[in-house]
Image 1 (cartoon, helix red, strand yellow):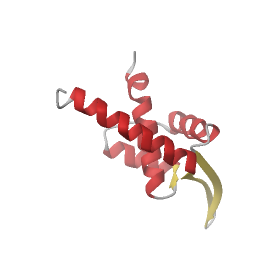
Image 2 (cartoon, rainbow, N blue to C red; image 1 turned 90 degrees about the vertical axis):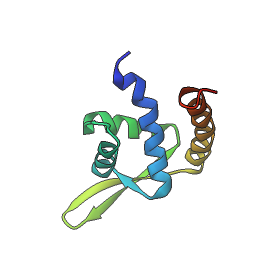
Image 3 (cartoon, one colour; image 1 turned 120 degrees about the vertical axis):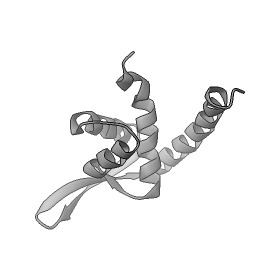
Image 4 (cartoon, rainbow, N blue to C red; image 1 turned 180 degrees about the vertical axis):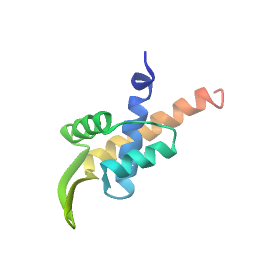
Length: 101
């Protein structure tokens, strides 16, 4: 198992968490994840975003800012439900991994 395999789910959860706080976009996500120790390229991130959108967890729109455009992602109702369920699972796992119970 590579690190990408191990951390892929955590990164997807982090993306959903960020989108629950405010609309997100590719470069902003890459920079935010870098602050948490994840180094990823756009070639890795965008398939994740597209996958989350295909599953109905995110929705996107094209936004024009000056001369440039970018795709902005927002969490959906289904994404919020999935994130809430995942939080419970992560809390349980955290208890086992870190707190020893």
